[in-house]
Image (cartoon, rainbow, N blue to C red; front, side, top):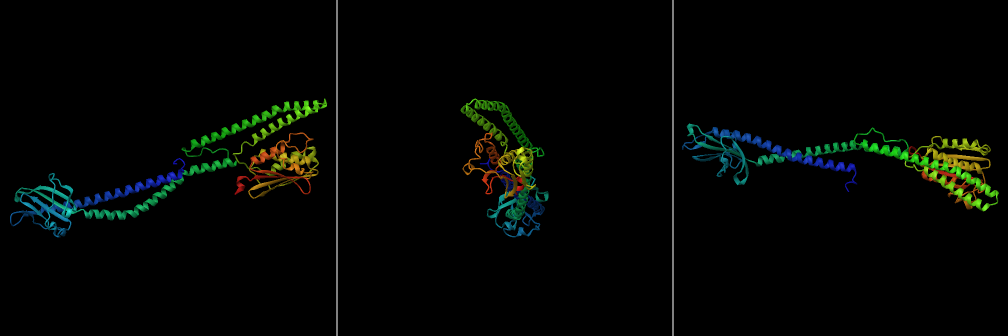
Amino acid sequence: MLNRLSLRLRLVFAGLASVGLALVAAFFGLSLLFERHVERRVAEELTLHLNQVIAGLGRDGGGALDVLRPLVDPRFERPLSGLYWQVASDGGVRRSRSLWDATLTLPDPPGPAPLQTTIAGPGGAPLLLVLREVVTDRRLGSQRVTAAVAIDRSDITRATADFRRDLLPYLALLALLLLAASAAQIAIGLRPLTELRLRIARIRSGASQRLGSDFPKEVQPLTSEVDALLQSREEQLRKARERAADLAHRLKTPLQALAGDVLRLRAAGQAKAADDIDGLIATMRRLVDHEMARARIADRDRRARTDPAKAMRDVVSVLRRTPRGEELDWTIEAPDDLRVDMDADDLAELLGVLTENAARYGRLSVRLAARRTGREAVIVIEDDGAGVPPDKLANVLKRGERLDTTSGGAGLGLSIASSLAEAAGGALALENRVSGGLRVTLRLPLSPELEA
C-alpha cells in the first residue's frame, strides 16, 4: 500500500507529521520554560520576603522570638491570601496573619543555603516554599531559627494557562507558515521529476533523443540508466533492421534463380509444376517483404513529425521519370504546415506503394491531396482508371491478395501499406469513385505539436 502511494502524498504526510510533532513539542516546551521562568521570578520575590522576615526578627514584650518589623506586602495580613511566612525556633512557631490558625509543615532545612520546594498549604493547596535556617546573633540568644515564606502555586498555574492561551494563535500562524514552506519545499524537490516526465514525453514525440545529464545528482543515476536503455534499444532495433535487410538481400538471388526455373518449366510444358513453384516463390517473397515491413514499423514508441507535402512531391518526382509516369497528369494539393506523426521513411514507403498503384491503373491523371480534419491528417490518392471490382474491394487490403494476376508481384504492396498505416495509429480505406477510378483515403494522427 505504501509503495503505491505517490511521492507527493508521502512528503505531505511526512511534512504534516513533522510539523505537528514540532508544534506540540514547542507548545509544551515553551509552556514548561514559561512556568519555570515564572517560578524562578516568584522564588526570587519569596527570597526577598524571606530576607525581610529574617531581618525583622526580634523579641516581643514577653521575650519570645517574633517578627517585629511589618512586611511591605499587605497579603501577609489578609487571612488565606495565598502569601504566608512562618518562623520556627526553640521558643515556638510564629506565623503570618494570612495563615490564620493553620501551621505549615516545613521540611528539615538543608543548612544555611535556601531551600526551594513545594508543600501542602491551608486546605491542601500546593505552595511554593522558600526556606532557610539561620542562627541569630547574641542579642537574640544565638539560637537556630527556621524561617520560611510560601505562596500559593495557583498564581503560577494561572499565569501558565494564560500564556498557553496566548501562545496558541501564534503557533497556529506558525503552523500555516511551516506548512506553506513545506509545500514549497515539496514542489521544488519534485520539480526534477516533473522535468523528467516532460523530457520522456519529448522523447516519445520525437522532439528529443535523450534525457540529458543536467539533472540533480540524486536523479542523474536514473537518467543515465534510461539513456543507456534507449541507446541499447536503438542499437537492437538497428541490428534487427539490418538483419532483415540482409535476409531479404540474401534471398533475392535464390528467388530469381527459381523464377528462371519456372520459365524453363513452362517452356518445357510442365505448367502445373511451374505454377506450384511460382506459388512458393510468391509465398517466400510475401514473407520476406512482410518481415521487412515489421522491422520498419517495430519502433513505434517514439513519435515523429513528418511533412506529407514533401513526401508527396518526392514520390511523384520519382514516378514522373518512369515511362508510365511521363504519360500521366499529376496534381498535388497539400498545405506546407501539415505534419503527421509517422516516420519519414515509413510515410515515403506508404505513399510510394499507393501512388505507384494509382500510376499503374490510372488512364490520364493521378491526384494527391492532404488536409487536416480534427486531430488527424487525411491524405487522398485518386486515379481515373477502371477502379476495383466491387466483389474484391473488401479483400484487396488482405495480405497476398492480387488485383491483377497477369502482372508480377506477390500482392503484398497494399497489405504492407495497410500495416504501416495501422502501426502509425492510422487507417487505410479504398473506394471506387463515381466518375471512375479508385480513391485511397489514408488517415494519420497529427504530429504532437498540432494536436493541441
